[in-house]
Image 1 (tube, rainbow, N blue to C red):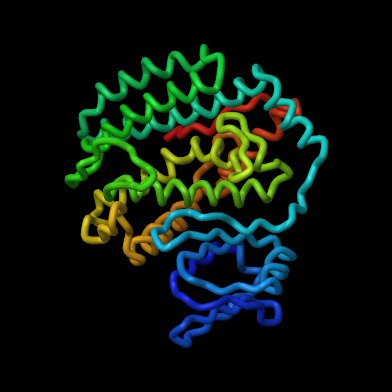
Image 2: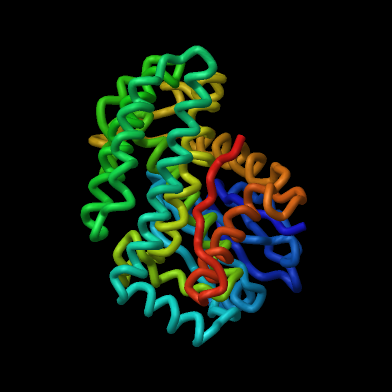
Length: 330
């Protein structure tokens, strides 16, 4: 079975026969058969060469890079093998036609809202009084179907998340001092965790999009850009409440991570390497977990749910079905 590999030690990666060889500075080497590699995440200083990149491209292996502060910096994406000119035309058509674009964009936000609401309802049922937050975002959600453009829709989404984040002080059992969401740079433990985990969800979604014929640069909620794969941002909105937020709640409430796992570095809060490892281990375990899919009537992993979401979007733009965003049903 293919899996993701995470590199935290400095050194270099090279091709060795039909395997990857990870060569660490301390002399510890590891050989990984290429058929086992789904994608690679690099959190350290690693040297690569074009021979290796060609080998990775031949085998469809993506590499995601993070800098010293664990900020996502970019991805190496192999040449697309699953291409479809007719699908690309339809994707662009649904972007350039405002009503078609808004139909998809509204559904992305409606799905994200429902999953946020489920999170609040989950913790409210477990003794945390979150009813006022639930009521506030429910009122805001009633405006989603009537938004006429993406800017208006993003405004509603921003207000929903602002109220949602204000509830985190109640959801999380430790003192977090979480007044507002800041990204560049994150100024406290919670903002650092959100930025890091959200970027990982983005790369997980991107990896799944590349396994389909969808073009990752044509998006509907976020504006297409030359510097990002914006469709991954769209789809990630749906899964962040389930995968990113619930992971953060669990890690903090179970005291797997605390303030001692972070260092203050000038104007930025930096996670220690051990924290990134804990997060990746916990997220991988979650993504491999299977649930009984209500429509397919079979067990599917959380990881596969992401790809299914992309397939649903493809069916929509090709006119085979109407897109309905994934909703937590448990």
